[in-house]
Amino acid sequence: MQQSRRGFIVIALIVIITLTTLAFVLIERYYYESTDFESMQIKRAKQLDSLPKNAKIKIGVTWPFFLDKGDNYFREGINLALKHINQEKLLEREIEVIFADDKWEKEDALSIAYDFANDPEVVAVIAHDDSVLAIPASIIYEYAHVVMVSPAVSDPNFTRVNFDYIFRNTPSDVDIGNRLASLSALMNLKKVAVINAKNSYSRSLAKIYTKEVLNLGSQVIYTAEFNEDEPNFSRILTHLSPQVNTNIDYDAIFIASYEENGMTFIKEARKQGIYSPILTGDMLDGNAILEAGEEMNGAIVASIYNAQLLNDKTQDFIDQFKKEYKRLPDTWAAQGYDAMMLLAYAIKKTGSLNTRKISDTLKYTRNYESIFGKYSLNERGDIEGREIYFKMVLSGKFKYLYFE
Image (cartoon, rainbow, N blue to C red; front, side):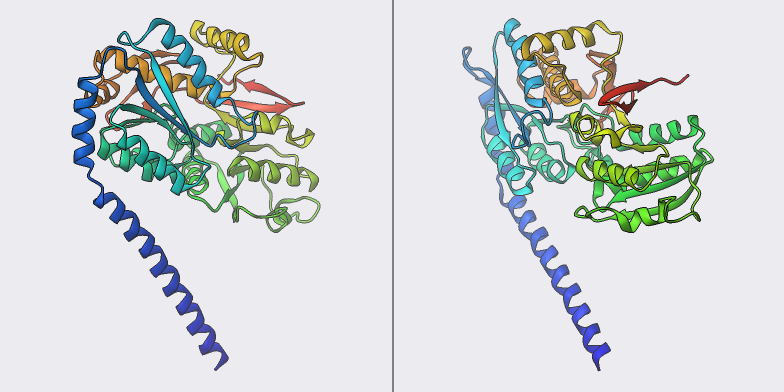
């Protein structure tokens, strides 16, 4: 009797969760379908075509600005690019940036997207560092004919729909995961433990890494997932710590997660006597890991930015950023700067504020000379030709790793 009652409760919970999820999907779909996107498109085309000569070019920038100052310098990168562009003017106009804080909340992201979409003078947006926000927001920008460039979303699903107005200036998780697997092979790491958080980004990166590392001849000898509120990872580390378990033999640990979980995992692993290499994605490429303590020593992070690149554009950017803000730029400062400069390049080359024409210019951009070196964009909106770098944490600093 008790078992059947438990079974009924389980079924009831599944039904409730399913109906709740369906309700959210239907509500979201209703908002998309009830919005007059065609009217937005027509108003935007007419307004931008007849924009007064003294009117500025409006570009929206959405980011989790609520984070403590110093977590990253994305805003500073945007502002530096804005300063450089406005000194020379763009189509004889200045750019006006409208900053908006998405607070890492989907509702805020969608509300901001609707606001930008409803402003017929907004030409483009630089938006979001999280695919959970960027993917649904991209639908609004696509239907409203607003050019969107994401400086941080690496989820392969972001550009899978082949939208016309949606782009990113960052490599996808496919590029990053495959390069991390190649690094494992170069380091002769034959037996790897793969750990990931239970979120779409972490699962995707872990899956890509696992597939490629197996293709390259290594073994994945242990896998585990953790909840994002996991306190100290003892459930997983019990299986990996030499202080507790000697049955699992591994050469390295790969962890896919967001920054806070990744740093906590590394710190707890070191406390458990785990000193094997720990590899992770670019989400940990920031100042926080350098300030998190000596336990981070030896951690290897993927990076899409190399401050040591012998490129005049790179070094000029670094010098100008230091002069302006009295500090070195980080990855997100570079990504913000590059996203704004890429949009300016496309607008200038198009010679028009027509968003469809700007989109077409971006799709066929080849060998664009950026602060990261040359890269191209494809018709799907993905970036091609960006290098992936690797950095090891040593005594509160990053040391770049170079391999032949």
